[in-house]
Length: 163
Image 1 (cartoon, rainbow, N blue to C red):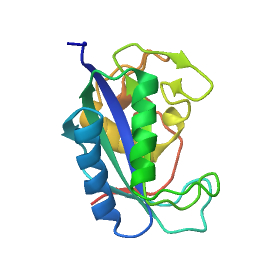
Image 2: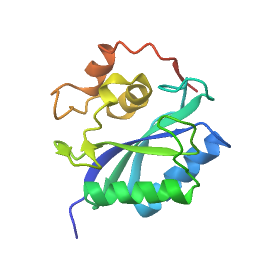
Image 3: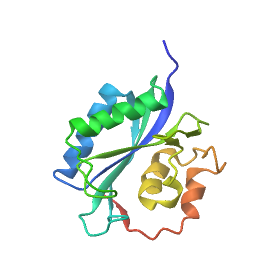
Image 4: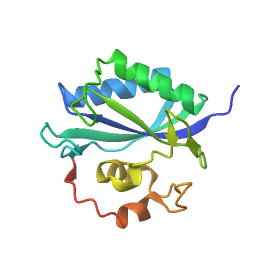
């Protein structure tokens, strides 16, 4: 059996039944990607990047999987597609968005379609708040800082509220 790696994901949704979208994504990830071993609370977040759209619900997950990072990304994109995600514009409205934030303890990738750790996660409160709840002691493999420390030094003032 292949070695199981821990990965951390961030889910986001701002269309339709947002809570239902998160539940369905968790269920599909658990079935198709790997065992979901921890989920953060759900957070209500103001839209980021493109602000003239409904607010988001965000949730971080920890998953144990034998999939490689690229295979995991393909599986996550397939889940988004299966759930009805249509990519019309960058940072636009979406039924579901699933981002791979961390993979393993020290994985650093700079591939065309996958960069790990997620290259913008350290700048975004909507990523760090839920991630800190479930993996505050996780050490960012590039910055060599705990998620909790990155969050405490963050300048992003975006409204992120645990619900």
